[in-house]
Length: 262
Image (tube, rainbow, N blue to C red; front, top):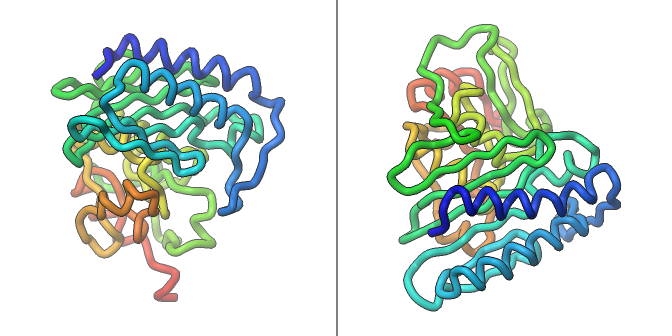
């Protein structure tokens, strides 16, 4: 396990690579039609090489080309998303970042997320608090949903598998980065997050922070959890997940409806 200070230095160095390309990059389309850029590839190579040197016995799972190297010893994986929010990155928007999560013994063990355009750094170490810019931060307490309640989700909410009912009193926003959404939720900037077909590199850092701060992942019908072994093989979540304090997302469930039911 590396220190928080070293992880911040490492991700800031990777962030300097990203900023060289920011607002000056041509995206390429992957097979799934999502974007990838030269910045994603350069950062992933840099992090892979650094982690192999520092932690040669550990495994690595990384987004681009579904890269995977199993551990030589033990059961620790570093999970890399070189740029989460690539579409925002390509469009010159500020909410994107570099994610470095840690899985150990099939559980979220810790992780780090750095947003170069805003300077925000999120961290979670085993047995330590969830940190935002070096300061411990907690989730919002449950309260009755109201006009300023905030649900974060993907921008294609209305065209995918779920819709928010017009009776919902609060706000819905999407910033383009699943990792950012989960970190914002875990540190008190939102009430809930609705996730679509996310993959393992979208989840680990926020998952570890939320686990520490009392957050849960549930399906829209109240089911618990997801299949980690499938995620570790590069598969997406089998169905959308609602994330937050259990008592808060119970309220949100009343305002969400599957498109399949319409």
